Image (cartoon, rainbow, N blue to C red):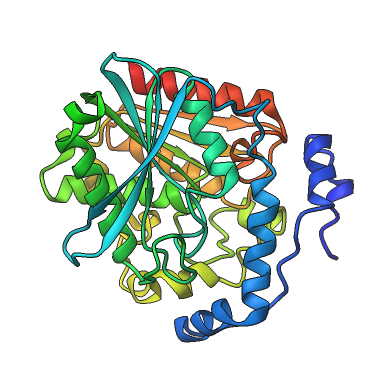
Length: 343
């Protein structure tokens, strides 16, 4: 039986209403990244991406996320080791103080979207308005180009995220950032990349670059459904459909097959995460990714990491990143992230 959003009384009524209007992604079966690349640049694929972007742009609402009192700039930097150019969107309160920083990685399954889409800009403004510098990294997507035109599979996006974070740390004085308070955060695919960035920093002996990790609804496993995680079955189809495994195919199926936690942190062991900085894992009740996020939180505890978990009831995947949908939920989560970053 097909999932009926209107009969799911777990969901906030506002979410049920918006899901009835959400752009539907046509079903497609792909078996290779090459097929996904061709689909992404086809007229049909471009139309789907345009519809998603236009829909998400409506959430950049000046009433919910005002720009007054903020400066928004972009810096282009060179990423390592490929020498490609990426962008950092910097949102800063009009203040001469040295502030804590939230280094934010946008979602999109590591394959699509952009930190310049309206809902992400609104989210950055909401965070910055609470007294922090927000740096949003525009990395190479694996399938659909953002304002960074190149597309490349794992580890390209991860390398870009690590490079951007390193640049922020090196230029903290210029940015008016307290380099001892740089927290990394991201939602969905950005949750994957934020965790993977910390894993990469640990392997390179660079954990001092981050003061904490705050992962929202992280996208960790690589193939679904997964019987270990009942939410991947019972909640599949609420906003996102995992069962085609499109992101795994587009981003890093070979990395999945070899069990590489830098691509799919669901493979991480207690040894991999031991020594992580303080961490929060936040999940949404009606999200197919909920249970793998909870499992990662429990892995952190088993490794002795100072970790905290939270479940936001009544919400779908990444509800907080659509600020006009449930504004009070967005604000509470944003306040929690900022409090975490400024500790």
